[in-house]
Length: 89
Image (cartoon, rainbow, N blue to C red; front, side, top):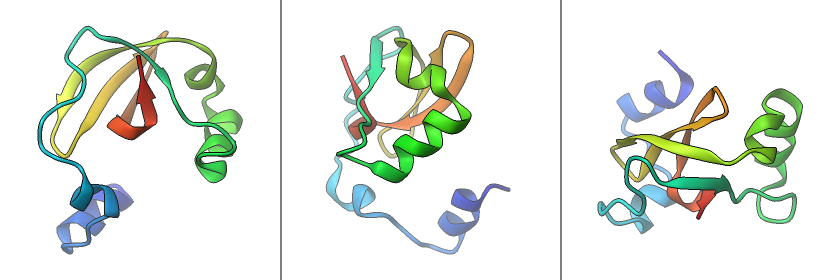
């Protein structure tokens, strides 16, 4: 069980769970880019740059729409779960 699954099981929510609606922003097959920059989310940007740099450099394709405005995205073979606010067309 991942950290986020454990926190969800305990009932912890994020601000994004409260602010985002349940309507998906993207659909399966959409071509997207990671919208994370050093200015918008420094910690997430540095993590991706260190461990998954392809996510920041290559376009991705939505593979699956998940609950809570999350998406499984394939970035040139690297599959990541991203939230709607972390993606752009």
